[in-house]
Image 1 (cartoon, rainbow, N blue to C red):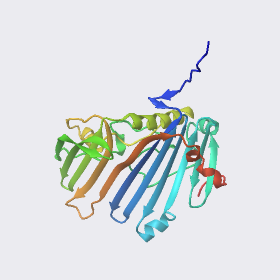
Image 2: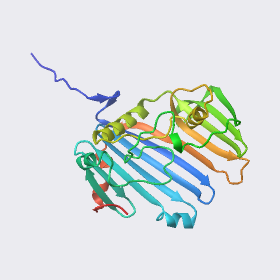
Image 3: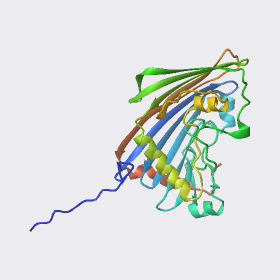
Image 4: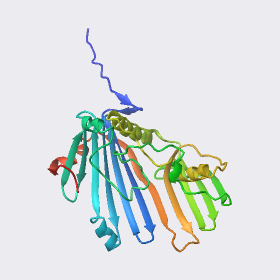
Length: 283
């Protein structure tokens, strides 16, 4: 009698352990005194390991100099070795700390990764505080004027955004200071998004930290703070735009998911820091 070997493949959230998910986001901001800032963030998630890399480009010379120049900074969470690594591509340096060291510090990493202009993805793995899903920031929220006018339009038809069927929601808030228009696109095809979030969250929680993120919807967060009733749209946001109108000191911001896909596992995607010099901490 011949025996046929049985091969077991471990899966997490419906994905094979022999694969990884790569997710790329782009955020563009045009603000007074700051000018234009472009942030491209790429995330790599596989079983028990997560890397995030953000590239920041600033157009105004003085702002760019104050930030230390355009930069590419990343971080890596490795559940197998229980280590957290931060690195700077420009300086070709990396620093490392263990999960045990972070646990001894009440779940707060000692090494800083990315700061400033990380306004959308909310996936900085050195977060200590968890943002609630409704975006309630307590005393930090801006005072809401009960006389403000709110309007909200939900498109009945679907649009294709980065390959996802998405439903568009437009929210307009008017006040004495001007008008804010927020456009958001949501998809209910969230399997890959949830996988990336689940991997990162579990690694952060394993060293005693808490995952912090921006609200699922910025318009819903603002309407909840204003105690306004509104219709919610299910799913995950794949694009949004925010623009201040009728205000000379206004600003524009746009975030968009550029791509997210499941691909074969690639070890080198989680070892970029190995060609850099090790330091105690990054500048």
